[in-house]
Amino acid sequence: MTALTPVFTPHWQAELELGYARLGDATRPVLRRHKGPLRVQKHLYAEGPEVCQHIIVHPPGGIAGGDRLDIRANVGANAWAQLTSPGAAKWYRATGPAFQTLTLHVEAGATLEWLPQENIVYAAAQAELNTLIELEGDARLFYWDMVALGRPASDERFDAGHFQARLDIRRDGELLWHERQRVNGGDGLLDSPVGLDGNPVFATLIVTGEIDAELMERCREIPSKVRGDLTQLPGLVIGRCLTSEALHARAWLIDLWRLLRPALLGREALPPRIWST
Image (cartoon, rainbow, N blue to C red; front, side, top):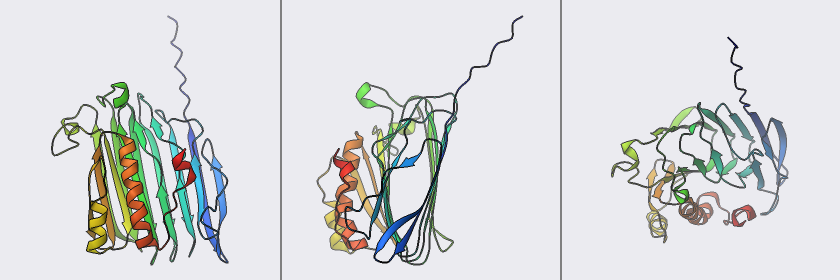
């Protein structure tokens, strides 16, 4: 009997480590280390030297079973980093899970904006994400994430596989936010009125700080095609939405960013050029 030759399935093991420091009146990248297919493009200063913008690129263009992405960033005292991505992260169908680990550390006086484009989780994908954010002292954070399950434009429902995510935010070691999500393909949660209610796209926004009732109302009155709302918790503004398309979620998040960034971070909201391409 001839032995069967195992099928070789290549897996990407990718790591990216970034560091930022305040040098005089400018934020400069002081660490950029990568292994495998994760990169950042040239740092940009569209708003002047105080804010360093990096665009994180994953050249393969998709994440498949067995892939592991590990992204770490440290924003030093009084520095300001804005991290985004050029397009959606695509999680492909697979026979095994794929993983992303995100570790963000923001020192006292520093600001981090984590503003990626959406995760598209194909039917039968097995996507597992783990995010840990450590804040020190008065560090500030503007964070969002978007998830699109299946590909409705191609009549693909998320009827198999799973999406799993964990998010922890701490300040000086004290837990501010802990969240776990798991959506299984074909689960009743996808259509339940107490679940996603037939909406394949959901998004979360988390910003450190507190806003007054007038600004909260302005945020809630933003014209939008999403079903969303905001909540003020001690030290955190939380936004959630459900919608039928990732474009609607992205537009809602950007509109909120335009209102909240000046109020909570003290800078005019100038959208990165990559968002308009």
